Image (cartoon, rainbow, N blue to C red):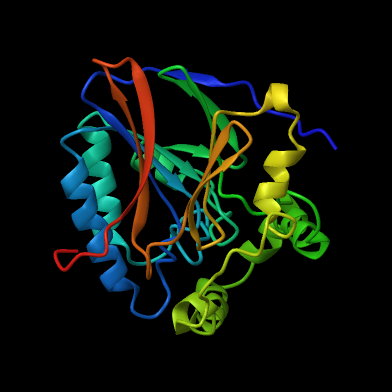
Length: 267
């Protein structure tokens, strides 16, 4: 089955500047204050050379915006993002399966650009497709149906009728029982035939493939070749603290893409 691709948005990377990617912080699970602190420290380290910051989904373990109420907490992260945005860094945010109910608050208050499905970017001669990764590829029809329901305006309207204390109480209940919160969600590579994001890339016709694919969702840091394309999975920040960086070497007129691990005592 051929995959329909998005038209690429052109971005210009200034010499000496970089594009950074991170995903799956799952802020809101027990103990996530330490995750937030480490992420904010990382943002401080990259602000000197960051031109574009891409947050690739599940930044929050649960997020829902009522008309006059937004989730409590995360002030250190939100304040730092506002600081970066005010300094001229462009921030792109992709919704994930845990924080799909973003309706404009981050766009209005911080100035992020919000995306709900994978997008393609043309930068430094490379086509990069970016998305959280949930619901892509073959199979998992149950989740795809649930995502379709949750994405409907009616479901969102119905949920908004719940009192925030009750609604967020339900979310916290499930967050406390999630695999990533309890440390028993270690992921392994299942093989090309069972990795749905690998299948998604392989199902894209060769002439329509991006040079680089960046996804999250799997909680498994990956950097691998699929034909002539590169597939990066960002892993997650709770345990791995991995991120990706795209930088242009002006002297060599080429680009490189790196997946880096930040598990150091300073973080």
